[in-house]
Length: 240
Image 1 (cartoon, rainbow, N blue to C red):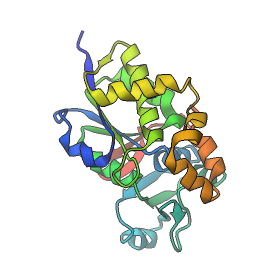
Image 2: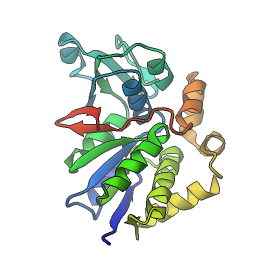
Image 3: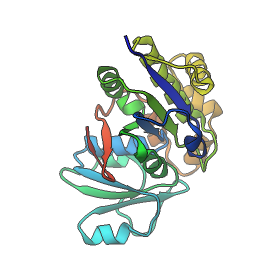
């Protein structure tokens, strides 16, 4: 039986140095909060989301009827209709809406991973659905953590460890990548309680608490609340 390999890029700055470069899947991760918010938006009915790595194109998309969602440093930008809050998306009626979305870290990582044969969005909110998809259609996998401004983040690495543990335990995947081994060790140490672990250890959690985003943080570490898998196709996220 062929076993697919997993590699973990702890930050976008490391992605170009990965060893898996041929046919592969990339899963982009930004637990706090972009990939969590994207899954929430689709679960709330959004039709498509265009990830952007800069703010400049937002107005052109707005003129075409797209809602603007934009965040920098954890705060909503200017005249954008939305920021980066998954709980705000879930309380909104986004049925059939198209969104143009730019964030500090997450959308940059999604676009960085667009060279993959399949580019997916991952978070605790969709971990079961994502795991089943990856097991049903195994392929060499790169997990791309967004981190914080190209630095390591505890919350993204914890999720990567949780996902790797599930995939490797399935027998369909294996890894000799040190980052994968480290992430799984970190996940195993948190006793299936990433929220409590990150409240104690993750710098971005404290940053967001200072912005009044406590409910988003709590939501971001809940598993299987938004059972959808967004996939990037020709620069646009739609449901897989």
